[in-house]
Length: 142
Image (cartoon, rainbow, N blue to C red; front, side, top):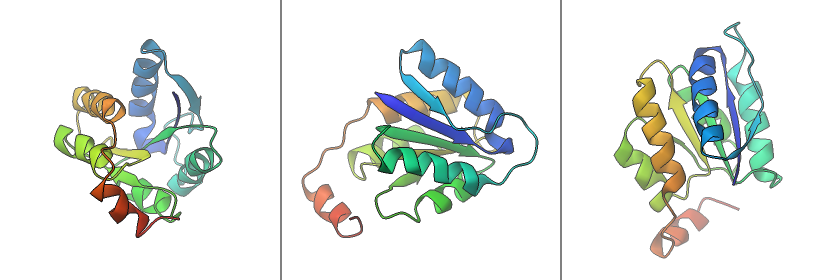
């Protein structure tokens, strides 16, 4: 599986930690930035992650900012994207099982690193159940 990952300055350090963990698990990673804690605009990185999902170069994406809110709002502008702002293991699992989320959004300033790493693992390991959930997704997706 190929995963695209991006962050703003508020999520940079957590992005680097998550990226290292994913590489340890033999995932193929595309890192679209940012590359430091210097202030940047989160929509620029959200757009890049969305582009990789939409054009099919990556299967899933991860976006990280201070709260996860800005990234999820920016990513969800595209009807083909289902970006889930997740803060616990239950919503990580449900965002995949019921919503087939293709982008995971995390808030580096609102969750601890260990929990974020667990969330990423649960999110990546959970399959979409389809069925009635696909019917609902079809109502708001292309």
